[in-house]
Amino acid sequence: MGRMEKRVFAGVLAALLLALGAMLLQDLLAGDAPRIYHITILLDGSDEAYWQSFRLGADRAARDRNADVGYIFRYEGTPAAAQAQALRQAWEGESDGVILCPLDRTLLEETLSEAPAHLAVVTVGAALEGADCAIAAGTEALGWQLAQALAADGVTAVTLYHSPQETETLALRRQAFLQALEELGIACASAAAQPEGVEGLPEGPAAALEPAMAEALCQAAAEAGQVYGIGSSNLLLHYLEEGTAAALVVQSGYDAGYLSLLRLLEALEGGKPQDQTLDCYTATAENMFTDPMDQILFPSI
Image (cartoon, rainbow, N blue to C red; front, side, top):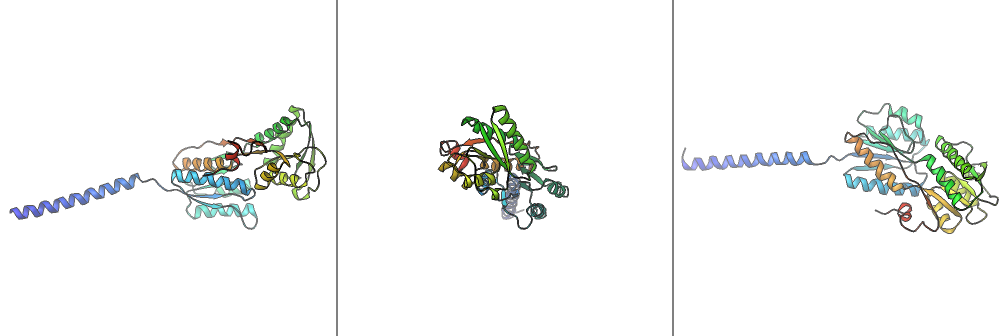
């Protein structure tokens, strides 16, 4: 082999080695690239302010962990059936995981029984059979916290307004609230009514265990500082600031969003996420704009 031929051969060999090295490097880098999971979040739109905070938390976690998130906040038609259908469409659309706030446990459990094995599911609120874990709202804790807020203001008697047809969650919350009132020595009268049917309140403190009823009580209140409730809607926070609501028991929607997405990604990566209960807090006109309550009520990115 002549000198020129050797040079050509060496050049070709070097080019081949460089190409092979580039291919190996590309494969190595591709192997290290994190997988982008596609997540669908199905939430009801009943408490707009809470879900806005929830979305901020979920979006923050998605950026931290490189996940792609899509949202469905409201459902057309019959909400429970539409949510079940949206869950089915999520896995048929090749979502890796779903976060949802259950509207009908039985219907959703039936739907989940047909889901592919690889689908990860985290619930916010009620736990579902077939889901990986739940970010719980602390149903009993909310009732106890509201009773403590009444006691802190020296209330000795209160009227509790509640819907005639309660969900399982609200029934448990009311049971915990009444038990706490009894232990604290606070007398309680009950009034069953739909939120839209509350027109005028008699004198004395009034309490509600759900945001819609708390809003109705504030609208019908006859005096300042009369209402004690649960929820952090924009309207309730307005009534808290102006003094119609004496205290509101709230939870961090931001934390719920952030934690639910982290737990879902943990399940997708082969882990076994545990249920987690959110803390609850009492917001008043005096603390609602101070740290840390301002970040709980008005979270920012």
